[in-house]
Image 1 (spheres, helix red, strand yellow):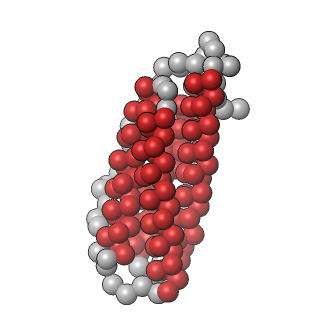
Image 2 (cartoon, rainbow, N blue to C red):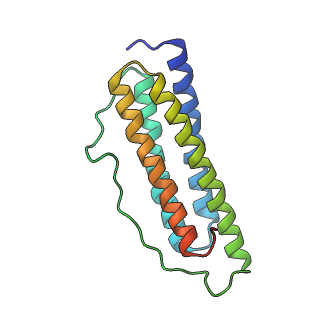
Image 3 (cartoon, rainbow, N blue to C red):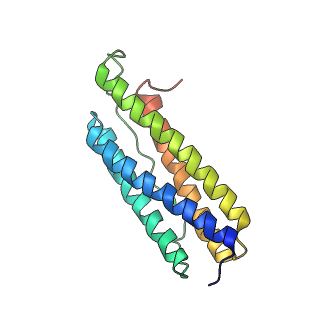
Length: 153
């Protein structure tokens, strides 16, 4: 598969973004105080590694077939752990981690959005669209955790 200079540049941007996501989620999983949040970050880290693997495959000229279902993930429900103590320093630290990762997901989703419109190969576009949907789901999961724990709004 031959990529244009622009497509190659976009793939490098996506690879860098995914590497950042993998590192952040792994690091933040170790820093999170709430066990549910640790689990969420670990789960998302694994999906981000799959995204990075997919981008590397595309860069190597192979477009993997994406699982059907548009990247749907089970919706997680969280038991609020911080409702009684809003000034808890652990809550503040976890809130910072969530806010940073939510911002990261917004950025990564926008990078995918641009790339999807710039690729001529429809199989690549479909693969990138699939990943973008999963990135948006990650953002939703973080948003839901933050909302249920009084960290958002």
